[in-house]
Amino acid sequence: MDGKKRTFNIDDPKLPDWIDDGDLASGGYPYNDKMPNDEYEKTVERLQIELVKMQYWLQDTGNRVVCAFEGRDAAGKGGTIFTLRQYMNPRSARNVALPKPSEIERGQWYFQRYISHFPTTGEFLTFDRSWYNRAGVEKVLGFCTPEQHESFLEEVPGFERLLVADGIHFFKFWLDIGQLMQLKRFHDRRHSPLKNWKFSPIDIEGAKRWDDYTKARDEMLARTHTAYAPWTIVRSNDKRRARIAVIRRILLSLPYKGRDMDVVGNEDALIIGSGHEFL
Image (cartoon, rainbow, N blue to C red; front, side, top):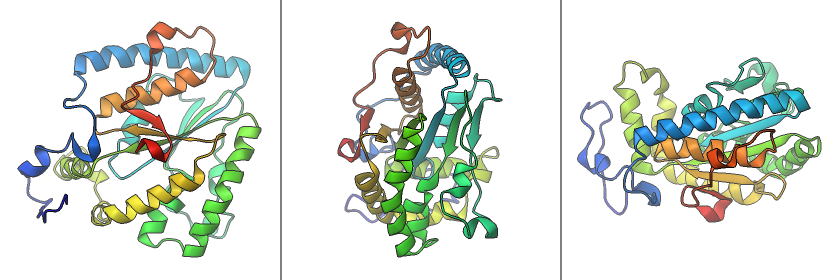
């Protein structure tokens, strides 16, 4: 790691100093400190009020939204989705987090199990991991063949063009996390009586294959970033800034009635950008 050999026993309740001292800065994160909690709470509450307005607009107009959230393990996908949907009406703002495919689903067209969850008029849908599993987890851990992986990368731009052409507002978010921050969050999960259910052998395997995941991510972004379905990259070592950046991007992209631009504000160009070049 950074030219040094490191030893990390995740079962030791004490976090090593070399992780604790470098977690926020890992991966080239641009801020030295996390966003103050008071500032975060005030900002996110005002943005969540805008999200409620946006949901009324969806229901009045019949527009549909799909947000796909991707990123390494512990990048903050679940927490971002929770904050995004926290005060929206759950009847028309749904989250989809699919388990591993069943025997029947493995015999279907790959995209079929995801399409069955797509929104109807007025719905806001989030995917906590999406069809891009095939470009990341399945590719790196050998859960798909090289031929299946290549076929996916060739087919997905056309698949997503159909979504956009049908009028769906489509967002693809990659939450980017530094290697030391990932290890810190794994350690937090391992030793938290509330969160240890999140920690699994897959996390350990993923941590050992950091470079393989990086190569898979880079190829995925290069081949599936399009003008009609671009990748939005969010630097997420600080979960607070990342959540605000995601919500702000959605609010700035949808022409909902009553949008208060003073509340929505401007994007932080150090935290959010477009495509692989931003990394």
